[in-house]
Length: 257
Image (cartoon, rainbow, N blue to C red):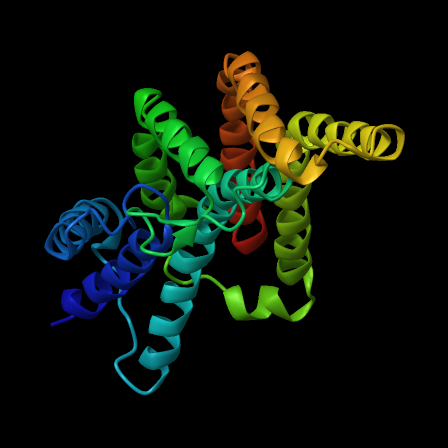
């Protein structure tokens, strides 16, 4: 009876993490699998860190549940934010290339996503799995109990505003990364628009609206093929930033063991 409340708190944090974090939160992953892996990971964490801990069984237990769920959601949200930077970069390119109107349903998130953003997201996901990134995510939630134990003071740490400032700064950083990833293609397509504007002024007999649409698509896809080898290094840097941000978040919510 003393161990069950502790196990449920661990289960709440890990389940909230798997609800938001990339790869595991995909709609293609069955819900029973998410619950099952959350249960077994919680069992491993409880066997390692949860024994011998007593939890007050009164109304304060609701606050403890909210605290654990918030920790899991914040950790998963950092990873989700970095992956959304890839789709944001794709949407920037789609607007310039003319694919902005042709959104597709992303099977991973179940929402509408840009074509090139979805393409880049799938490449990044394959690279993330090939470098065992999902194992690093499991390490992050398991070792979070060494940084943020069950008796943490998360609500007191949220009062000074450092946590909200970190989240805003991370969101801004992800937006800047998205802009940097899309900058070469967006700049080239913008210069194409400038060239078409000069063509329309110097040779009015050409219909730039008919010429411009296929020309921008050809230039955009050609540049995407040229820049494709550089995506590996780009995504690797993005994943390093993601894990570094997770570590910084753990340091803000707890302390380094």
